[in-house]
Length: 64
Image (cartoon, rainbow, N blue to C red; front, side, top):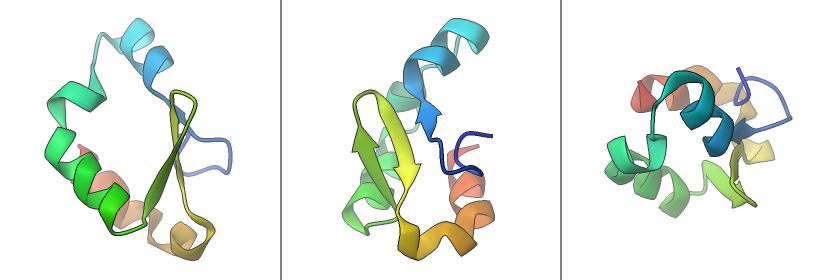
């Protein structure tokens, strides 16, 4: 839900609560989203850039 909100997605919380290492499992997808400016890293979190908030469902689909 963090990506749906302006808060952000915590990689540490995702790993602790669900045992899922998003950075390891979806590295190519994250790299593409970073290169295209869809997401930005911020201290262990990923957040959507303001320009793409309306594309949140598409970004989430790439990460599941």
